[in-house]
Length: 125
Length: 125
DNA sequence: CGTCTGTCTCGACGTTCGTCAAATCAGAGA
DNA sequence: TCTCTGATTTGACGAACGTCGAGACAGACG
Image (cartoon, rainbow over all chains, first blue to last red; front, side):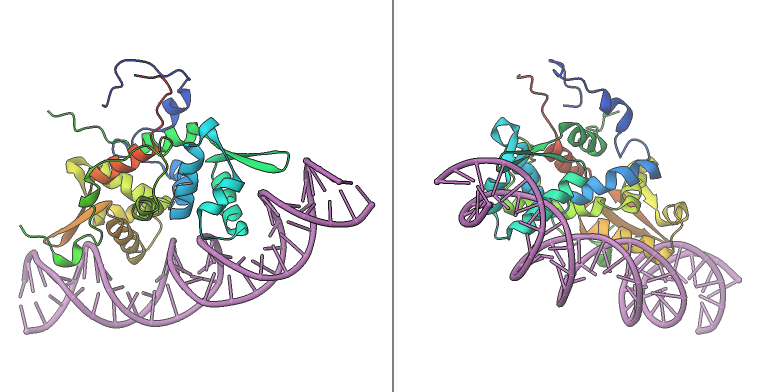
């Protein structure tokens, strides 16, 4: 699956071009590490990883805090804190519409992280 | 041939042989989050992210601590601590050969993490 | 206007993290 | 054996984290 033969993605992936040569292919510069590590860090908590998934996989591409919070045995402020962490890491976006606040994933950075981690299936020599 | 007992990874990830439905496709179960979050957490430090890259991209697939340590403005014990963190997260393997200790990436878990983060470009197959 | 509901901020708490210096362990070689 | 070098462990410290309760803020609705 290294080459997605077949359809090209609908959206432009220019962001990937400059940002993520795979971790295992060339050494990550300190500056890149400093920028991307916080994103990994944000995903390094089980609650936030689930929150991220719930948001990214939600119908319509967004999830309301009111449906996120009751999915955990945690208080509102704690969930709010985790969402803020995800937001500050650039992983999600928040928007208030009336009474409720909706969170939406940012696919670009997800792709960036995935690209960094991608491992070429050992092009057998 | 047998590995040094003290250097074996703490986490056994064999159970996760079946790879990762993308984060954005289906909601990550709590159990999966609990298993994978520590790996992201381990990558959530700039020094460890660079270490991981240096190891994974090294020639021969392995890197000696003796070449890792001088790449940072940190003491030996600190680098050793970070390497232990990567090892306990299941991201790398260590092996002592004579005087030196070599670290080697574990591609399986890297692929797992990349798969979790992968964002399918909406285009249907 | 006042009140209610949903969400966030603030302050506090115990825990974990990143770092170092000192001590210890593991081999290599004289 | 003894010593030297490379790597890890131990113990300590301040900083950051995850969590909570109490309070503040933002809209909706009478």
